[in-house]
Length: 457
Ligand SMILES: *Cc1c(COP(=O)(O)O)cnc(C)c1O
Image (cartoon, helix red, strand yellow):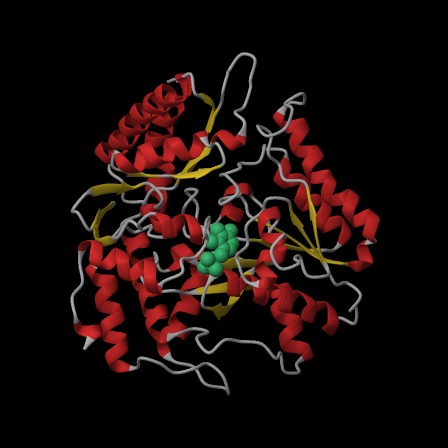
């Protein structure tokens, strides 16, 4: 029986080509080459089919925060599957793992959050956001408060609603997105501007593009503003200090809901439990996913503040929304085991006081390389801007694909990081040791040299 055969090597690559269409992939381009097949992983390292060891500077897709090879997470899943592999939370039912995880999430979240709504991924969580925000205003008798404001170049997922919330032009161009009722304002990307303003002046200007949009639409038409505390997939865009306080002021003044998409920043990535803690903002809703399980099983959800939960509960009426796998027992058991690891090993504080500052220092030193126009890193989330010239500052023509050239050198030299245009981004696991951090910086420096040689030669 085919399913029981053990395939390996080029055999696997052929099967992949014949039977598998990959996510976020140019199918024609991949069809002409071969996929890299990852077969196992341990700590911060992944290993491919040929046994090549690669430091995972992206934690998978920003998710394997506790690192690979955590037996206690695996055991938690196995035990739960033996006890109760599945039951739903519909029809007035619940089960111990979803209840225990809900209580645990309350413990680690900012004080306005006492409740959670479970989903299966970040995209689903943001679909829930769109439904729930509109439900909230309907229940308050203000159904005309319908429009959700997001930002250019934001990433909120890949379903129809989540991709609409996102601000990625190439995604919108496929399939007529965004859906009605979702509009976009400026992102606080100072390095991507003409840099004629100071970062703080620029941050205020970006925040005020939100206020301009609210005034244009009329505040009584606006339901919510959604943003990532630090834009991840868009290129690790860390806003100037002036940005978030101004956004908070604007949301407060116009009475609109503030949604902090914590899918990457949630559960410690910035050295605080949530991005909202780091920036001192008070969101009404926080979608999360990725790091909640360190990627061992899929799980997402939305933390719901009392402002919203009180209305849903007091006004009543069925909210016709939920997923078969909302609060899946094995996924919840995995999340509990993962959060226990973060707590017991003080991994969040470790990012703030130890490995965060340590990696940041090495990262900053990469700024002296002639190819690097800016370095930035908050917690364990960083970016390098590759530039053609530093004085005067000139960026490459994107078509030259310098970011991709550099990314390929990195992977071939044993370090996964990602290229977003000519921005190289990193988000290593929280368990990264000092030695492994040194290795990251060394490989990066070497690959910057190789990239320089490749484009000069
Ligand atoms: C990855 C991501 C999502 C989507 O999560 P999926 O689990 O891939 O659906 C949403 N928001 C942000 C900020 C993300 O980085």
